[in-house]
Image (cartoon, rainbow, N blue to C red):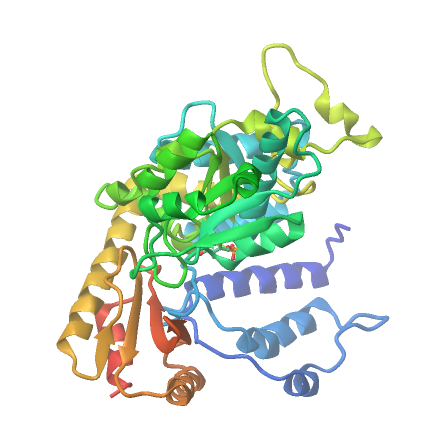
Length: 457
Ligand SMILES: *Cc1c(COP(=O)(O)O)cnc(C)c1O
């Protein structure tokens, strides 16, 4: 595949030049286009002879890329944005160029070693013991599913076969992410959602009451209790200490979904909000959300990785060579710790960025986002047309534009996007259509957010 002709040289230059240009760009917000518009503009790009790399790059640059919203735009405040560092993005190109199979130690030891150092940093922040470990998966959805599969494996294993055909039960909260229900559906398990308090947090006493209200049979079916450290809608942190204590006392697997919020553990000023996470059997955090890594990257960490290995390792003739025992050392095969096999070394851009800038810069960046959030809360308190709904624990701000109908929220949101000003979509809170800012980008300024608030007058 390595043809060193002029055309290849020209294409190499064009691709690298475009990539570097895009990394440095103050990106336009852009917006989606219709299939009809894209068909008219791009035509058929897959042809027997090929359209050539330069032309394909032109189609991407001029037609396709503008039909994607730039998640790293400083005024992209919907869902959970991303704000990857320059080092992480550029190193992502290196990962792609290096043809690494990062599913096994045999093939990917150097990459896996570095990924494991990054996982170790997260595990230490959570206060898990030295033997804790895990793997980077594509996102929180896979992370939660894989952790719950390990939890159920452990529950069935520890009850000596009695529960092998019993449908399991996960206890979570009404504030839990949709991926918990999705995992339960995939696993053919049930979920009980205990009511969160008025701020959206699951509290230990509510959890106790919820479990007490179950029948004995249902209580025996519980294989995991899930807490959320940073709910996606309101950004509030569940009572991890209370929930963890209950789970530990019941001997039930305690999983913490920190996909968005657990990033804030790296700031010493924020770490106390996560007290109790050290009791968990597993947790996740998405570096592609608030830890400045590019998509797609979720860290999944187990207190006792041997359980995950027992639950997830695939066995097949052609894979046997990966499981040869080497005395004195277990070879860390990342494939064995989640529901996957082939994998990209997707933790490496995050590792490279951490190694480049140092963990202090991460703490500072988190604090900058927290200061921005506090400034925005002040602005909302000081304005007459908007009203804060939940005092934020982290960097998500839920607020109401007084007097607006759902249609008015929607129309404003679409107008702002099409004008290239900001991307803020409505959400709902207690059944009411409201607005939500999610801040993860340290480059977003209070003035920019002030402009957004002004546009709602
Ligand atoms: C975003 C999120 C998820 C899902 O993560 P993906 O990476 O989008 O799959 C799960 N849980 C929480 C709390 C989240 O915020």
